[in-house]
Amino acid sequence: MGVVTDRRRVVRVREGVRAARPDTLAVEEPLMVRLVGPGDLVSRARPLAAVAGGAVAGGAVAGGLVPVGGVVPVGGVLPDGVLPGARPAGSTLTVTMRTPGDDFDLVAGWLVSEGAVTAREDIAGMRLCPDEDNTVEVALAPGVEPPRQRAFATTSACGVCGSDTVVEVRAALRWPVAADAVTVGTGVIAALPDLLRERQRAFERTGGLHAAGLFTAHGEPLYVREDVGRHNAVDKVVGAALRDGALPAAGTVLQVSGRASFELVQKAARAGIPVLSAISAPSTLAVDLAEECGLTLLGFVRGDSMNVYTRADRLR
Image 1: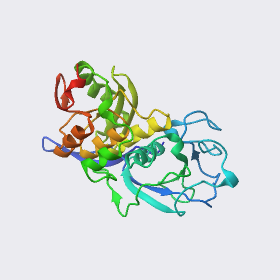
Image 2: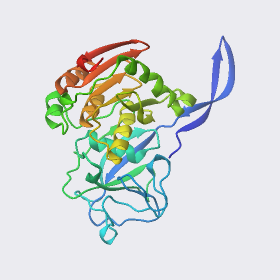
Image 3: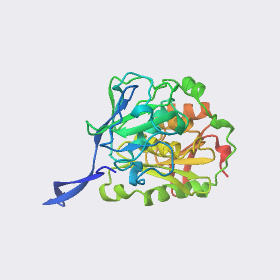
């Protein structure tokens, strides 16, 4: 787990009175995602993480990292110490601004959102780059095509998704969420923002982080993640589910702490999540995409009030 918060000196003005004091801020740093190709040697000097769930040598630690000396890939030992891959060594897939921590979840979830992977076996392994900070190297399983390469950075305010249109997203879905027969009580939906807020540990100290949580239809928390970017928080949740072999996330509800954008609907649909609930408003394109995919989209979920924009038949 990286450093999530930092202390800075500020001048607080209250009722015309100035006072110097420390303030706790959320950390925002770039993360480069690099595809590792054939011929890249595995360094044992830095952690290497298996995408599959379960025990690894040395034991797992917070954030899904593996201690030094931990072993690797899904499905067995690396041949000759080489990470398999489909693209030339050093290909940069994307650079995103994020809050450090749960970086392997973030990368795995981003690959799901880009339509590159659908199962943990699609990722051969991930590691922290031994030579560069804030860099994760990922190797895809043989036959798995990487997402298209990014020529620019994505910000914490807005991510970038691989599909450009509503029709493209629906056509690319591996798990059609429209057929999901889950129903959710309005009381369960109404309780989710508070359940999510209770688990926002960094937000409690900074007030500056978004959160996303995956819940059962009965309101039981499965995964909760925080990040300065709401799209990153969702990717971390989806990535955690992928690494646990829990995709598609049928019968679940994704609760987010902010608004519902087109990209968040896309991420939910690609993970097989049938219900997306947001504290704030959705965009028009988000509603269009939810309608096209058959996803239940809720906004302004506050107290006992909520707006249901699509597939209200799932609420009881």
